Image (tube, rainbow, N blue to C red):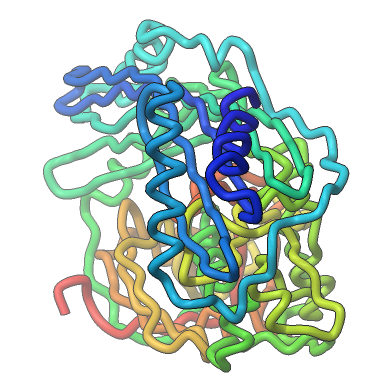
Length: 444
């Protein structure tokens, strides 16, 4: 917090009327990577990052700093930001900095994870490799800790901290790959042996995969593809900027989803990770995006809330820096159901069990049509039983349609924390969906 306050003092000295907001992020990131069943890289580094946004006479600019936080470096940061602002045009949509507000006490922190040594990660890698039972193994185990301080010229100030640990690995035969992953606030929660066994089982059971005709199939999506679906819905749908420019599907108050779907952006959930305020210092309060199938909330930054008018307020979803896409949900939580894995399978007449999605790209944000590939294990399910492995497929599917009323046939009881590929994690179960459109093989 001292560095953030120091930046505000320097801004006030250089420009008495300027508004300013500053975030200081101090972190440690460590990664142990393995390939060919051997550890081949260990990276462990500390970082310090400062983001500053200033507004002088309605002219707004940002600057950032990586490295030592000295009076000299912070002074240059302030000078650069103000110099940039003074040559910019007036920003008519500048909403001003956030007023003081109470930040909820959220502390997703584990001391052992923050202090994890290379050997702590290596033990989990060794367990993964042993459990793979002679199959070639590759992947990583990572730990991260961050302490974040925010302050602005209106008097808002906040400090938060969080840790996270992730393990992602594959086991490989000559013709197939199987994947398993886990994430948590605590490194101690990651069981390398269980993950290695799961990955190896997937690899062995897909070694003799055969083709299947493209078409519409029931699917069971495991947590990784579920997180992919929800992240696209969040970025392109519930986002206030997308609503304002007409590219969003979201219509608050309408039953756009199956009644089994209740989706929140909730950093306070015990199974999540992260800090309780955003890059603008706004509290990240829990938001119901979908409640029992009904679209409930549009998320905002301060800028998109001001543009929306009608009493709209920031929901605490701004990211550090200039984020042209607007508000981003970074702590998605999908409500669990009451079905274990066997019960989900039992409900499938004829469909596919899918481990992962890969290389997904949105084709039409308004209809949420996305194309992508499956990988790391796909199986044909008939009458509630896994029949055989099938080769990877390309799909072209509306994510919105996939979760539409009547199309969600089952929701898993067990949830997993999954990195969502944007800026956070999603806490999600597996889903049984009534129809998914596969358009070809992985090669075309």
